[in-house]
Image (cartoon, rainbow, N blue to C red; front, side):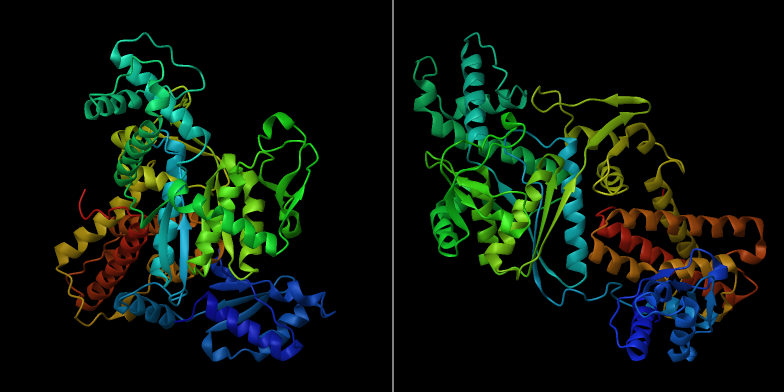
Length: 564
């Protein structure tokens, strides 16, 4: 089957043969039928480098390409090259989709990748902001696995540090409150009501603990920490399960990572990447907890593209947050992954360069890491914004949103925007059963396709007579179906997951348009009782559509409904 990758290979080979230069030509699906099926501006892109007129370059490229592959190759405008396939080529593409068991290209070849995502501090249930990174990481993992990578989905439990001390204190105060003491929750503590339930269960399981004693907090501190983290992680896992997400591995900072820190530091000292030094005070010093005007152990992250070197140990010997990142990513690399993916929240954008520098340093540049930061999420109900604040206890949980719109709608809406742009989720829109709700529109298209196939009792083993497909609307649908593999390759290269939802919407629109045409024109209907060959061909097209649409929805872990 001819696709973007194959056209690109033909063009690249032509340029190498003509000019002796290696290029990676950008081939696009033409947005206008008059520009053929595929188009490229590579002649314009390389003309300056080889000191030739773009049109002349385009002519020379075209001459060296085997024109038997295409029905037509044309040069347009200042040097664009447009490629057109024959109708029979598109029929072959449709047949390929119908017969292919696996619609995904084998890109990974069994290479091992780790995807770390969510990794929320275990201090409360998941809020809607966390859901964005959770869905992104899960769908990215699905695509990687489908394209031949060996994927490990991992959650890093930040169960050490100040936030866990605060969590234990918050739980202790709730226990005192339940014990009958009048308690005012300090501003620095977690005020969420979920801690009341955890406190009740903690006291039930520890009936002999005397919370009335002044030193009770110190006496029970480790028990409070352990129980609070365990119970909050149970809440988080419950919310993730409701969202359709299951992890392969949970790594504890306290138990798995920090015990390795000394050895990792020694290793980096030996490599000359950690040294003793004093950092200059950064701008906005009040926002830099790790800065102090004393000699500290510093990591040479500036050597690897970071803005400055980063503290690893403070002057009193306690590790910084960054020290944990170093030890954890050393742990990742030591497990032999070929590539790492890390999904962060917007508040961790500043960590990207330093983490990239750590991975580069520890792996000697052999293990790439792709880091994506998720922008903010706003929840709307029509024109009204719903505010949230985890610190005040008024945050909107994932569970609450799922109760309102369902798992599928939430997952789909999260992937309708680029990860680095803000996202508005309109609850009222996602509750509609209309074209205004894109997921409903897509699922409705699949249900329509299934109803046609059921009614006609479609038999895949029969002769399909695909040459009967000639209508423009039918061919447009075939072309969009044939773009699925190219879409997946593009997503693997760019990690732009929002392109999946765009594609599914466009695919559903083309099918609905074909359905509408059939309602107006008897000659365009899927089932023609007087023409068995045409009916067989059109049912095959409907089958291919349902197959691709269902495959795309499955990547998102969304049900492809067969009736509505």
